[in-house]
Length: 169
Length: 90
Image (cartoon, rainbow over all chains, first blue to last red; front, side):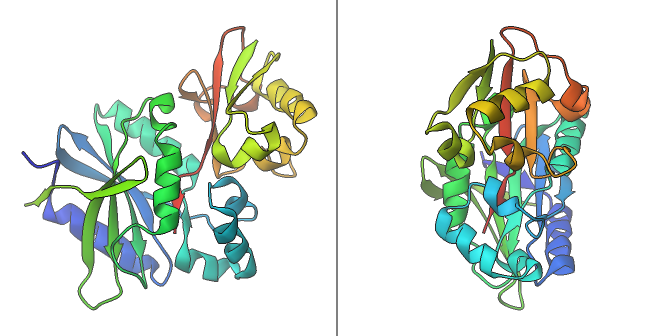
């Protein structure tokens, strides 16, 4: 059995989201039941908001790099989820009787694999998911660096990255 | 006492502690108490108008305070509070 089954229209929706925001990174959540994904939640990327880099688990080098960039430039190489949007999505997921399955974001200029920052923050977050009563999600990346978008999904556990087994139909 | 979970990015302010205790009757009071013991923490959590920043959530016993009574949310002995930084990446 696949780790996740994602309908094509949901992938199309994520690609549309990534293209709408390019050259900035987009981010969001997928939720469903069992291994079946059936809902997309777009979340605002607020990396350009003052102070966001200080409370987002960026390592000091990445935070320093972000501080040197203009707000617009920051959103080309990073995302920070608007936690107000996140909470609304979390509540809706619960009300619909669904479960969080995937955190997604785009890499407008880079391949569809987790960056060092992605791995570090996902690893930090492993201890947070159970505290807020959510399962540890898979991480889906959309790369727009080539004409054809590339989408790959991973598990990130204890700093180790493995490909998730995803069926698209 | 209230148990407060501190996320990794704020641990430099709590001398590396991932969990601290505070005596407080509300979330607002908890933030003030934490800020006295660990100066600078309030600035990270609240903007200049005192509102919770959009890149942080505070959960009381797994419920987001935005769906309770915000910073006025009551706390009682034994409550567990989690300060949760935004999901982020590069």
